[in-house]
Image (cartoon, rainbow, N blue to C red; front, side):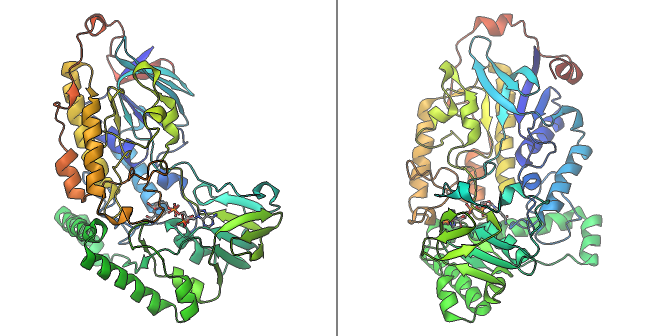
Length: 506
Ligand code: NAP
């Protein structure tokens, strides 16, 4: 049986970041298991027209792998995907990658103190697992009455079908989140008609995007400090937006006014403006940035249906308002299964308890990373590790600092299991911090667990606070492992080299 020191599940920003961090620390005994045929996670899966990032490009990249060549203040999806593919080459990760290989089960073996990893391409054991399987991976398609009778074509934004011709078709888009507001302007002018089903109006502010000039790009290429200055400025601009999420009334009022001014400046028709005005607090759902969504709707090229898609009757879509629309193609921009992560059913900790069972009332993890009953497992991008106002990559790097510290300590102790009490009190701390925030101000969002109403996806503080709280590993909240005979007489020896690690079972 192949044995590695660390198995990384997922080759998106988090998994590749973990791989780079391990290699740079001198660790070679690891594999990255990725079910897709290429790396990139979100940026591989989301290829819909208009896909882009709403965090500035220099900030939305690894601090340890700056990219002086970002073309724009906000990068398009393809450019980010290319950045990650280049990272694989420049960091020589290729030999560690197992692409097209799905993790199908992760079982903790208490006797041998190893994770038994089953994949579609073979099995292995690992001292530790970094679970970097993403948080927005599984498309959510509403279970609508009559959906199976639809006579046209359907797709989800994260499963874009290039083979589906949209020119001249009557296209309906369901949803008005971050994906929809990027897609809809691209469809206008291509499709014969575009109808948007809006269950909740989004808050939208201007997108301060532009291409970097030749002079700027030259400066970035010749002066790493120039890139760092831009990145630092972008980070603090992001942090400044936290006050409006934290519940500061003046900051919320200013944020609301900015969005209302944007709406007013782009939509002249008062009735349409009313239909596009949200009825919940700004920031409660993700605040969107767009310069072309309102103009597309206001131009008449896009028809706004201000209610949910409620049912389907063969070629006709029926809105909650009762309005009926004939359509050839339905595009679901309806988001992802986030509260209940699909991977949670595949992970069995001590006593065969699954992560899904452990999280039956919502996800929790100490330091947003470690789960009681799941020793030597580190969840990146999991419970309370997301942000609504700053860069997800900063959060990932913070978690990786923590995990590297933990792995160093693991070498000494063999088993690291966080205590139940530490996990519980961290969750209570999260609840206290979340209480005054806009995320709990009454709207329904993917940040909340529908079973408990708890904020389980976002960290309810600033990015800097996350790093201060969770960036450094401390063994104190971890249980002292019992002295095990197996850790002294283990016969599954770690491999002498990564080639040996990969040579069996793959
Ligand atoms: P989302 O934010 O979860 O939005 C899903 C949308 O579908 C919501 O507007 C929801 O309405 C709507 N919906 C669901 N069922 C419906 C129905 N039957 N009829 C009408 N509308 C319905 O999903 P997303 O837009 O894919 O974005 C998910 C996350 O991915 C974002 O929050 C962001 O973190 C990330 N993302 C980022 C970017 C970027 O960087 N620009 C781009 C895309 C995605 P309700 O609001 O009423 O639930």
